[in-house]
Amino acid sequence: MVTDASGRLARGPALILMLTAALAVSVVSVTNGAYPLSAGDILGVLVGDLEDEVARMVFVDVRLPRLVLGFLVGAVLAVSGALLQGLFRNPLADPGLIGVSAGASLAAIAVIVLGGTWLGGWVDLAGNWALPIAAFAGGSGTVFLAWRIARRAGETSVATLLLAGIAINAIAGAGTGLLTFYSSDEELRSLTFWTMGSLGHAAWDDVAMAAPWLVVSLCAAPFLARPLDAFLLGEQVVGHLGYNTDWTKRITILIAGLGVGAAVAVSGLIGFVGLVVPHLVRHSLGAGHRIVIPASALAGGTLLVGADCLARVVVAPAELPIGLMMALIGGPFFLLLLLRTRVT
Amino acid sequence: MLLRVDNASVRLGGRQIVDRLDFQLDAGELLVVLGPNGAGKSTLLKALAGEYKIHAGSVALAGKALKDWTGKCLARQRAVMPQRVEVNFPLTVEEIVRLGRPPEPLSKSQPILEELMALLDITHLQSRLAPGLSGGEQQRVQLARVLAQVWDTRKPVLLLLDECTSALDPAHQQQVFSLLRKLAWQRGFAVLAVAHDLNLAARFADRLLLLHEGQCHSSGEPLDVLTESALAEVYGLSARILNLEEGYPLVVPRDGRCAKDYDTLSWPGLAPQNSSCRQAS
Image (cartoon, rainbow over all chains, first blue to last red; front, top):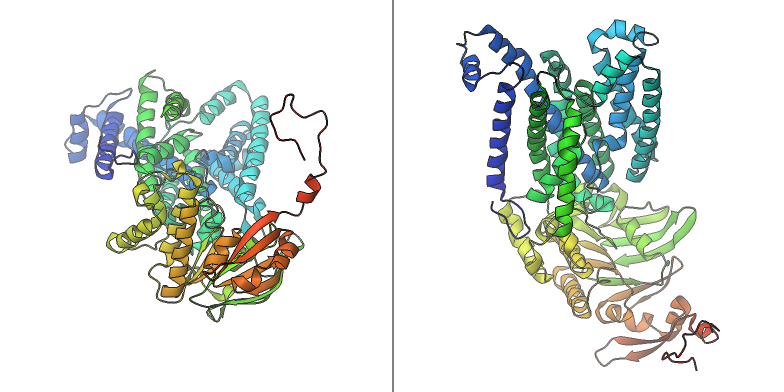
């Protein structure tokens, strides 16, 4: 592969490679699973002359929404990671850091465990949507809380935001632990599955609920590229260069909070995407956000769709939770990366 | 008058760091702000950069109060170099310098970047990653970035530089200050540079501003400000001042405030055995 003096890949070939990978992974993902489809079947559905009604249904109602949701969720998690790493000026920041994942999972688990008792009214009212809406509200609520705490005299302190996030994570973690302790065996099962993440229930309903938030945060993120580049030089430099520092912080937190909140609401907790993908992109294509944001979106989507495909193939007809899959792939890979960068 | 500071005070944590300061800076002038650690130099610069609020008094840039400027307009006419900029991300030198530029086509920014990288002697580093550079190299990169921000501005420009040569070797220190003076004299930049190197300041500054506990101790031409009594009062530094025939003073420091106390120090029992160190006389 072509590299320049700073050890980066040339952007043109890299983009073509990533698009090819995204397409290939998508095709592999929609054709594989408990009911195998051939590339011919897919083509048949797309042009509309497929006889096999079951194949058509599997593709349109099962595989396609799962592909779309997987891609969007992966893209949003990776982009949110990139945004927050830029904002915190720390390549190890993760969407979970500002409390969004912890808040979302606390709310979701509360619905699972207390749905029959204290939260019965809410479950009756919202029906199937009770869990995703609660998770979304929990996620955005904690981000808002962390942000309010970090706000003093009209300015947002990034360091306080980080500390508030850590404290909120701990509190929400304790709440989650307490609920887990009081859950029944059956609840524990669905709860475990949820905390490990899954795209298994993805249907067009979920896509319709989450997609607007996911798409909005994906489309808004590139507009933050320039001020976030300035953030890499330090918070005060952002102001010197003429950008509105506080506005940038607020919008970044809002976009990441809404995006990750929506992602967690439909797919549970999926780690590592937000950490590994931007890291990889930065080291192969450069740290400028005009490249990092779109490239992370593409690579994050591809990675999650690929991991999801693996998760349902390796133990078919059962499925591994995708969060588990991501940690299994991402963990060792990240370690390898660390060891390699230490050597060079 | 490009910059007018009127009776300005800055408070931080209940302490008056800059205390009723009055001075002006014209386009085409290189002003060096001197003073011991904690005299309020950086606080003054940060207040002028808009990071701290002016608690009393006023600061006006080109006749308009600083707080009435919009960020975008200000960025075209005033550039700031902080004392320290740490880059943790793999950005190349060229990318960092480019951050100073507004969104514009490559054909416009490229000649500016190339000129600035040549002026600051970083052309050979342009595709290196910033985190791997030495402190002095990083400082030159940041200065190039700061200059890029206002390089094609037609209106008078204010440069605020906080110890912009502190990590440079002597040759690059001279080079950078000659460049700054050239920018002031030939392009009409108003340059306010905070510095510690008295001789660098003496050689290049049009005017010095000597700060002492947040107040102006004295200001004027180097020969008038850098006197033995001023250095003793402000820094507690005893020094000899030589008037060079080049027309600027040379400061030869002798002892700091505490040096005489060191004469009486001794560490009985802690001296190394068979010491080859010099014994205190």
